[in-house]
Image 1 (cartoon, rainbow, N blue to C red):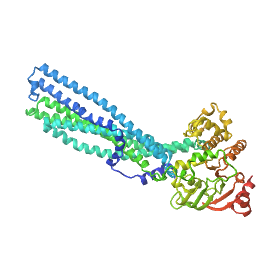
Image 2 (spheres, rainbow, N blue to C red; image 1 turned 180 degrees about the vertical axis):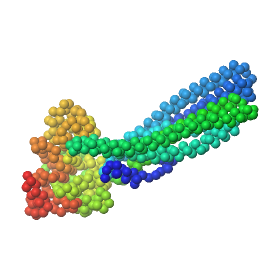
Image 3 (cartoon, helix red, strand yellow; image 1 turned 180 degrees about the horizontal axis):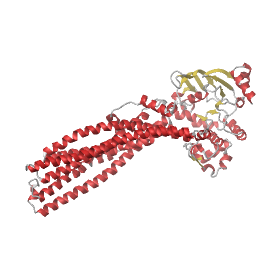
Image 4 (cartoon, helix red, strand yellow; image 1 turned 120 degrees about the vertical axis):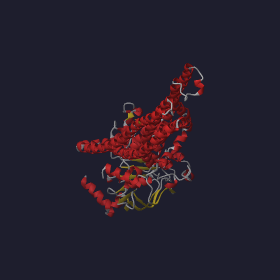
Length: 626
C-alpha cells in the first residue's frame, strides 16, 4: 500500500466530524491561559467600533452644516459656520486618531495572543506525541506528524487572534453601524439590511465548501511531506537502485493533487471577495437610487444621503473582512480537527495513579544506593536483584495475530540469557515488552517480583539499559549524547568512556568530548556511534542489560576492545542478549530458542547441540556457511 493510499484510508476511516462550536471550544482552555490579553483585546472593541462608526456621521454633519440643512445638529446650527466646521473637523480627527491607535494596539495584542496559544498547543502536542506508545508510530508516517505539529499548529493561533476576535470586532462594528443608521433613516437602513441577509447566507455556504477543500488539501500536504521525508532518509537506496525518476513521478502526482485542492480553496476565497465587491457596489447604487427619490420628495437631506452612502460602503467593509477572517477560521478548524486527532490519541502506557516513587525502594532500598554498591561488587555472594519473569505472556501487534504465545520462563538474578531464532520468532518483541514499549495482551512481566505495570516508567528504564543494533545520536556534542540530559558530571562521563574502552576514540575527535555531532551522527562512523551507545549504558550502571546485536556494527579489532569492557559491564548484572551469530553466545548461562513466538528449547550451548533440535540446525547451518 502506497503512502497516499494509507493516508487516504486513515482520513476516511478516522476522521470524526465535529461542529464548529465544539472545535472552537477546544481552544478556549488555551485562551484562558492568556486571559489578560484576551480581556484587553475584547475591551478595545467598543472604542474602536464607536470611533469607526461615527466618522461617516460626522462627514454627513459637515455637508448638512454647509448646506444649512435641518438634519444638522442644533448645537452646530446655533454657531458660526466656521466654528461648527472646526468642531466637526476636530471630532473627526480625534475619531480617526483613536481608531488608528487602538486598532494598531489591538492588532499587536491579538498577534501576541495568537503566538502564545500556538506555543502552548505546540508544547502540549509535542509532549503528548512523545508519550504515545510505539504502536502509534508504527502506523503513522513521520511526515504526517511533522505537518500537524508545525504547519497545522501555526494556523491555530490565528483562529483566536486574527479570526475570532476579528470577527467579533467586525460584528460589533456592523451592529453599531446599523444602530446609527436606523436612528437616522430607517427606510435606507432596512434596504441595506435586506441586502445583508442573503449575502451572509452565501458566505457561510461558500466557507463550508472552502473548509472541505482545505481539509483535503492539508491531507495531501501531509502525504507530500511523508514522501519527502521518506526519500531523504532513504536517499542511498533511491540512488543505488535508480528510483529517482519513479519517485519523482510519485511526488509529482501527489503535488498535483495538492495543487488541485489548493486551487479549490483559492476559487472559493476569490468568489467570496468578488461577490462582496459587487454587492458593495450594488448597495451604494441602491442607496443613491432610493435616497435620490427621497431627496427629490424632500424626505431626506443631502447630508443624510451622504452619510448613508458612506455607511453603505463601510457596512460591507466589515463583511468583507469578516469573510476573510472566516476563511482563516475555517482553515483553523481544519487544523483543529487534524491536531485534535493526535491529541485524542490515547496514551496506552501510563503510570498508575496509585504507584509511588518508592515501589522498588520499598523492596530493595533506593536504587541509587543499589547502583552505588554495584560499582564494587562482592563476587563471593550471589546477586539478589535483576530477576525477570514472564508469566504466561501473550502479545499481538494487531487483533489476534499473536507474535508472542504463552511465554512462561524465569531469568534468575545475574543470569546471562541469549535469545535466538529465525526472523519473526519474537526476539525483539520480548525486549519491547520488557521495556514496556508495549503492553502484553495477556499475562504479566515481573522484575524482582514486581509487575512492571506497577513501576513508574522512569524508574523501570533507569533500572535497565538497552543497547540496540544501531545507535541513534542526537544533534549536539559527545557529552550530551552520553548523558542524554541526565545530570552527570564531566568526570562521570569520562569515567564511563574509560570503563567501555572508548575514551581514546573520543579524545581523538577534533574537540574531544565537546565535538559537535550532526543529526543522527552522520559525521562519525556506525561503529563509533555504537561505541557511544555502550558509554550511555555504562554511565547509568543498570541492574539489567539488554543487548540487541550490539556488536554487529563493530569491526573485529573494535569488537574485541569493547568485548573486554562488556565482560566487566555484565558482572553481577542480569543480561539478555539477542544474537544472530551463534558463536558469540556460547558462554551464556542459558539460550532460549524461539520459533513463531513460542519458546521451544532452552539450555546451554552444549545441551542444545546434544538435543539436535532447531538450535543445533541453526548452528550447523552457520558453521557450514562459515
